[in-house]
Length: 455
Ligand code: TYD
Ligand code: MG
Image 1 (cartoon, rainbow, N blue to C red):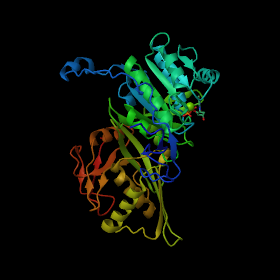
Image 2 (cartoon, helix red, strand yellow):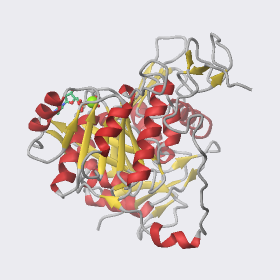
Image 3 (cartoon, rainbow, N blue to C red):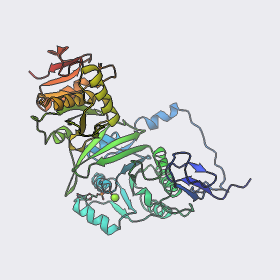
Image 4 (cartoon, helix red, strand yellow):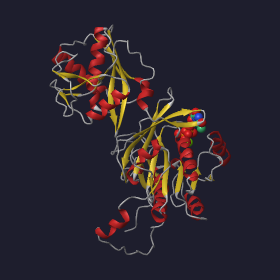
């Protein structure tokens, strides 16, 4: 049977429909279905002779794969997030809001790599070569031997890449500008982006170059349109940050060759991105220890401790239903903490508006912040500041028990390094330092522990 000429693809989730519909069954979005050509791939079209593959034994591969060959930038914050450098033959997607600094980061990475003798090609589909060069000059990266190309057509890009010596690393900025002659739909559609990304991944696999793909993120926090791309690449990094603040965080979301919970912290300056090797100092920089409602949370991001201030404001409400507003934390989690405080600790906040903010625009994803949030709430309600030299961490369960969290020792070590002398943490923690006082708590009803951590 002949293949249908066209198919209908949801631009949001990539679900393929046989006919047009107003609403996508896959993701429930309206008006996202667009007619596209199913022959969207490069090569592999009809008429291509099949090539027989040759399976090899898993054990004989070990010599080649013992350690993934990597391209290191020497920018520690970036290398940590990729798991020790970009892996040759693999594809990495760097996502983030427009204007957050993706192009800046990658231009700096390209310059750093080329200074280390690597061959880098930077393909810009968004800016002209002159613009990219101007930016590179601003960043002090203009003297490096990074090769620039301003192209958006996939076939042209492949021809450019195939020319001359093989590159060690290719940067495509951005995948949303890619379009291929073989895909018969408008640039920016799922088919075009997917076709382009497929071609780039194939190039990386064939030549052993590391491929870095830049993708813009939509308001909903997805790589614009094609979620599909996330599944195709080996690693996904998100570059995020608050426009009102200067620092930016590079976060691993997926990584086939390394850990997925690492972050790299940068600060945007007039000379581009600067590495921030001690993020705790940055997040605690503007701290006012005497204010009620502020608790310092000793958190972890991957292998790295991050201390950050949790701020709560509790005020009598003038509304029928009190307000709950959260910035930098999960609002469902806040509701849970409020319920636990009410049920087990006698802290009644039903007639109070509750605002919670994580200082510096930082976002906490760990449940270990529960105790810090609870302490901040109680402190604000009581209008009494918490001890300035104390950090807080521990997960609170619905029963009111405080559960131990991982990496207690690292959290305490970082706190001590930054001048904190005590910590409130789960009494059942495995690694409790000497001198801990058990069964003492600032929050009545939560059986915690205060530990002196400095002599
Ligand atoms: P850019 O890398 O173009 O963002 P993206 O590629 O993610 O869209 O960054 C643009 C922003 O960064 C812009 O608002 C200006 C700012 N910026 C600086 O503050 N300092 C600099 O040295 C550079 C190059 C950019
Ligand atoms: Mg850009």
